[in-house]
Image (cartoon, rainbow, N blue to C red; front, side, top):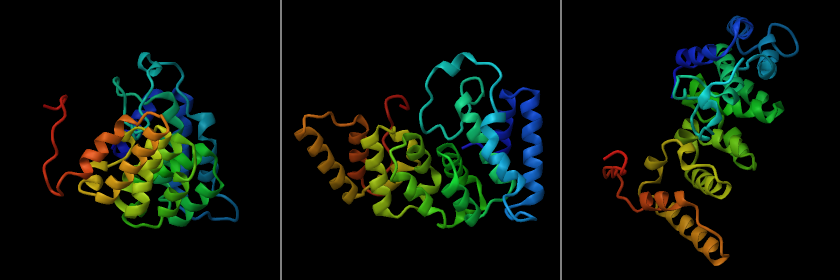
Length: 244
């Protein structure tokens, strides 16, 4: 996962001068105000959070922009150390939330009243906020997992979910990803959590049986997770062909 400094540098590389100036001012305002506005109504940085999609745009395409990016890149830079255009507003919103030191009540409010893009940014920001240490934002993750928005689901199963989502909810999240086509790479730390999890193995087996009985294909990622549920806890992970 990119540090905040690395993420900001990756965003600024894709912006024109106007975009960089806007982002600098937005982050300055967020840092000055913090999570609590000085006056009634939303803080200036909250308005910037909402409008980031209009200001943070790549001025020109890069050759690798045409290739689809996996759902689980977690705002990682591409081959040329650039973010994909569709990641820029998310990344800017993550930076604004971090600069504002957004707390649990603030992110819950922004999530509840936000658009799909704003909710996705809240979820992607969780590992970079101080509230990452606690489970206060679990209800936001669980809400996202109830949707059929695959980009929202992919954002929900990041590092925060890996650390805080209860076992039953995490198992359901894995099934949700398989069911909706979200790649396994979106599920942060899935190998650790799936290893030796017999209940998850049972659920995956039932799901595979239902798909087969209905004449539907079984997702390719299912076998990978199922194999991990049969591994002994603490056993070393087997190398893939690419890693060996």
